[in-house]
Image (cartoon, rainbow, N blue to C red; front, side, top):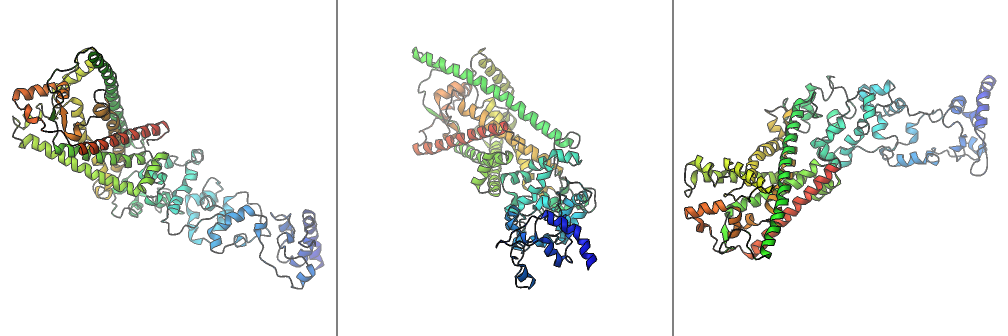
Length: 618
C-alpha cells in the first residue's frame, strides 16, 4: 500500500500544482489529491493530469460535493455531471440534436471523461467514436471517404463533416424538404471546394454539372424533395470508385440505381451522362451540340437585331417625314377614298389559333425560364408563386399540350389551303409557291433587298404581297421549333419511354437543345417579333389586326399594295370588305389581353438580360 502511495506522489504533486484551490458553493475547498486517495483505483492521476480537464479540480464538475465527511459517509447524493456549466456552446448545439431526443447525453459519447485528450480535429478519433453506436453505418470505413480518413487525410469526409459534431439533426424517413436538401448540401460543402478537389485528385466539376442538370436546378430553386440528390445515386456512406463492382455507380449497377426513381429504366437509359459537360475531349457530342446551338442562337439574334435597329431608325425618320408633309398640307402615302374602311385579313380560326399561341408561349416561358436561370432570385420568386417546381412543371406540360394543339391546327389549315380550298387557282405546288402561301419564294429575296435599301436611304419602301418575309420566317420557325423544342421536350417529358430505344446520352443532348432553343424562341419572340409586329414606328404601341382580323384600306394599300392590286385585278377585293367593325367589348378585352402579353414578354426580356449580366443562363 505504501509503495502505491509513493508511486502516486509525482502525479499528485503535478495535479495539485495545476489545480488551483477550487471553492465549493459554501466556500469549502477539497484538494484533488484527497479525492484520488479513494478513487485512485478507478482513474489514473497521471492520465487525468494530462487530460483536457487536468487543470480542473474534481469539485469543478462534482459541485454537489461540498462536505467531505458527509460524502465519505455516503450521505451526499452524487448527480450526473452537468457539462453545460462550462461547455455552453457545445451544449446549445447538443440540445438541438437528435441525440438529446434519444436520451444520448455528453458522457454517453465522452466515456473517457477523466483521460480525455485534445482531439486536435483528428477525424479518425471522431469516426471511431461514432461507429461505437452506429455499427450499421460501419460500411463507411470501407468507402473512399473512410479509407482516406483512416490514412490520415483530413480533407476526406468524416461523420462530423456531414452530420456536425454536436448539432446532429434527425434524418427521418428521408422525404422532407430539409432532409432531401441535406442529401446534397453536405456533399457540396467539400466538392465545391476546387482547391481541395484538385489537391486530392478528385473530379472537380461534380457540383457545377449537377447544378446545370434538371435535378440541380430544382435543388437550387428550393425543391430538393422533388429530385435526386448526391446521396441518392452515390449512397450516403458506401461511396466507392466507379470501377469498384460494389459501387452504386458502377456500370453494372446503374440500372438498379436509376430504377429507384425511374422504375422502367433500361440499360440504354442508364447511359445518361450524370455529370456530362460540354467538354470537347470527354463529351464531344455534347460539345458540338452546344456549339451548333450557340452558333444558331448568336447568328439569328445578330441578323435580326441589326434588322430591327435599322428599321427602328428608318421608321422614325419616315414618321417625321409624314408629320412634316401633313403640316404642309400634303398627304404622305397612297391616296384613296374611304381610307378607314375595314377589310378582313384573318378569319376567326386564325385569331383563335393565334390566341392559343400566345397563351401557350407565355405559359411555357414563365414556367421554363425560371428553371433555366435557377440561380437568380427572381426565379425562386416565380417558383414560389406557382406553388413549387412540380406545379410549374404541370403548367409547363399543359401549355406544351396547347402547343401541339395549335401546331396540329396549323397543319390542318395548311392541308386545307393546299388541297381543299376551291377559291384558289392551280394545283397544290402552284398554291404552295403562290402569292397567298407562307412558303418562302424568290420574291422574298427581292423584298429583303428592297427593305435594306430603304433602311439605308437608297430606295423607296417596298410594298408586299399577302405575306412579308418576316412573317414567313415566323411561320417556318414554328416547324423548326416544334422539331427542336417539341421533340426534345417530349424526350424529357417521357424519359422512360424514350429510354427504351434511345441511349441515355440522348437526353443530355435533348437538354441542351431544349434549353437553348427555348432561349432562342423566347428572346426572338419578345424582342424581334414584338418589334416587327408592335414596336416598329408604323405600328407602335400595338397592331391589333391578329386579334380582330381587320385592317384599314389605307394600311392595306401602304403595306400590302401588291396584294391589293392582285385582288383588284381578280375582282375579289370587295369580298373581303367587312360589313361592320369588331365589337367594343370584344376589342376592349382582347386588346387588354394583348397588352398584358406584351408587358409579360418585355418583363421576361428584362429578367433574362439581368440574369446574363449576373452569371445566369446555364
